[in-house]
Image (cartoon, rainbow, N blue to C red; front, side, top):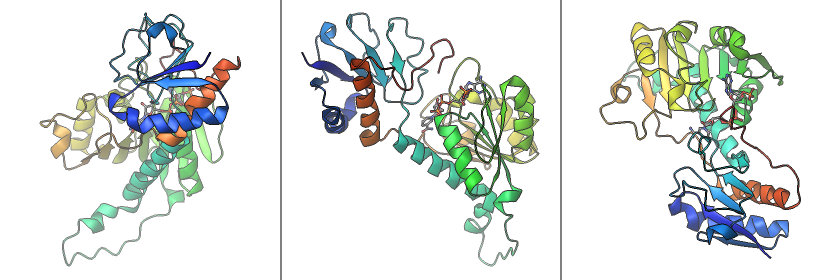
Amino acid sequence: MPVNILYAATPGKWETYQPTLKKALQATGLNFDLRNEFDPEAVDYIVYASNSPLQDFTPYKNLKAVLNLWAGVEGIVGNKSLTVPLARMVDTGMTSGMVEWVTGHTLRHHLGMDRHILAKPGEWYPVAPPLAKNRRVTVLGLGALGSACATTLASLGFNVAGWSRSAKSMPGVTCHHGPEGLKEALAHGEITILLMPNTPETENTLNAETIAMLPRGAIILNPGRGPLIDDAALLSALDTGQVGHATLDVFRVEPLPADHAYWTHPKVTVTPHIASETRPDTASEVIAENIRRGESGEPFLHLVDRSRGY
Ligand SMILES: NC(=O)c1ccc[n+]([C@@H]2O[C@H](COP(=O)([O-])OP(=O)(O)OC[C@H]3O[C@@H](n4cnc5c(N)ncnc54)[C@H](OP(=O)(O)O)[C@@H]3O)[C@@H](O)[C@H]2O)c1
């Protein structure tokens, strides 16, 4: 009997994923049947994304696991009809993309590139930027993406601190954790980068009180999730100068509504949720490896802890 795999992720991407999933599954040596339609009772694994029309898992009575193509799982983690293991995506392609976006935007602000890119003809400002070792950067969230960004920035010479829920140790990064570690992490963050998941605990991590703990004029980069920031508190801190600039990739409502203050604020850069994305070739290898593991009774990779919400 083949292993039946239902593709129920973003409908428009089936054509893209079908060949990469097929290739990765063939490399495992499994006997499989991959389709975007199945009798629910025949399905063993579902390749998923929370913008799928499939929201009720009850008819999938023989399901072994749901394998998410996205890193963020806030759109599925609370689904009561899902009772089997849920794995999220950790993809080397997505990680590289995030490291490149974060490094680029960190260097933009560190080097003060805007001053010269936006300079008027004749403006001559002969002040060299500081070295990375004299720039304090904080990464909030040290998971798959945050740790890769933190260690890359440290390898460029930045003075990097990080913050996570549990204690961590990584080369070149001063790691803080738990509610008590947040204050020190924030005080360090001349450039502060948010790479946490969207959970009830992380909502409004940056609020009026915590923004006040940042160095004056701090730069905020948010490629994590919109709800990590209290928008009203950020807009007010931008106006007082407590925050120097915010580069935001993610928002509570996406696309960001046309009349939102972020669009026209002179100290805000909006990017349209493009910091990184799942790359079909490398992500398909992760999906295939998880199905191979499921079939040989080995533990799944990147399992979501439903009680934590990520
Ligand atoms: N903009 C984009 O294009 C894009 C693309 C991909 C992902 N994302 C976002 O990036 C997020 C992070 O992805 P990831 O793969 O790095 O996730 P991850 O591996 O699950 O890492 C999450 C990190 O956040 C920390 N954290 C969670 N709750 C916390 C809390 N209450 N207090 C302090 N730290 C907390 C975790 O701490 P522990 O290490 O102690 O568990 C972990 O270090 C995703 O959830 C998604 O929202 C955005």
